Image 1 (spheres, rainbow, N blue to C red):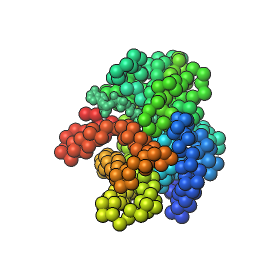
Image 2: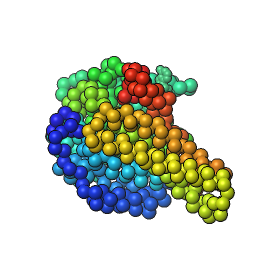
Image 3: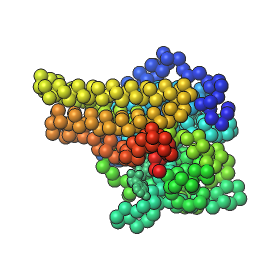
Image 4: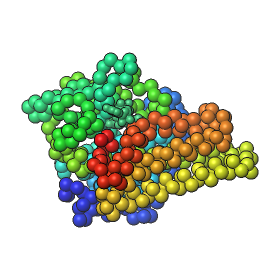
Length: 408
Ligand SMILES: Cc1cc2nc3c(=O)[nH]c(=O)nc-3n(C[C@H](O)[C@H](O)[C@H](O)COP(=O)(O)OP(=O)(O)OC[C@H]3O[C@@H](n4cnc5c(N)ncnc54)[C@H](O)[C@@H]3O)c2cc1C
């Protein structure tokens, strides 16, 4: 395997198209029959969607981005078979956006392991996923500017010791905190801030695999009481002098930035936004037909806009996935930012079309529109849409731009 598997001359061929359709069909059935009915309760209780992940494991989907030679499905940008992954994510997000965020975190973590880990690490960790149903997450979140009323700062400190490091401090936005067994921690060895801290972190950022069953790792669930994405359980996680052995380092310092891996994940988030839009759209159509409002010209216009929006979002994702799979990486990265921006906007607009066309009762539970509205509102703040758009503009203008976290 070369440093960048996407450039490898002979990546394992992806599953045949028939297999892809079969897998997608199974996921769609699970999503419709099991995951969507569970979503409201997971949201209300703000708990990790454990049963959903159990079902995904039982049906052989947890290794979605694990290479086929390690027993996985081999989907994703690393293996040049990107669209089936994103379509699965959209399908899951249609049932439950929080589930999709946890799923993305897991799938993206496995992409990083595939791209950067040693053969021995891959053997060990991919076996844990495929055979034992272990779930992974990737955590950077160390926002540095405290908000009003926030007294403690988030952040980690890393001390080199014999055979590894001691990690202390905290991370916020730790998606899947109470559900995952392993976390890839994005740590700046020079101090707090994680991967988003400052451009200087690029050459030194470490990816460290942390066993979350270590008793020195604790979850503070009091912090996470958000408007939406509640079942992502993106809690604060604290590290109390946690020992990380040296053989848990994934890749070389700075490997995350050298491989520009964040750019592969940005359009994956957009695949989730599309799922949220589809959930609202389909519910809205059923609602409007049930009420016999199809003859109203304003309703017709809104439905036309919704239909064009979801089609446009699909086409964008298909386009970007194609660029990744053709190895046109520079184009894929810029197009991924454009797709994120346009899909986020179209998804939000679609939900508002549904609300305006259907009326107030569509925002009363158990309508899924109510939850999708809350989830999308929070989820699209994962990245700053102004900065993403400015990144696209800088690229067009030939100005220097940050393809990772859009923060120049
Ligand atoms: C549902 C959800 C799940 C998440 N899951 C994960 C996860 O699993 N792993 C993970 O690593 N992260 C995760 N994140 C966190 C995400 O990556 C960001 O770190 C987080 O959203 C930052 O929080 P904030 O927007 O409050 O912080 P801030 O960093 O304060 O950003 C707020 C806004 O201010 C801007 N800003 C920041 N600094 C400055 C400045 N100096 N001057 C001007 N503007 C500035 C930012 O661009 C942003 O628009 C998740 C976020 C969400 C919403």
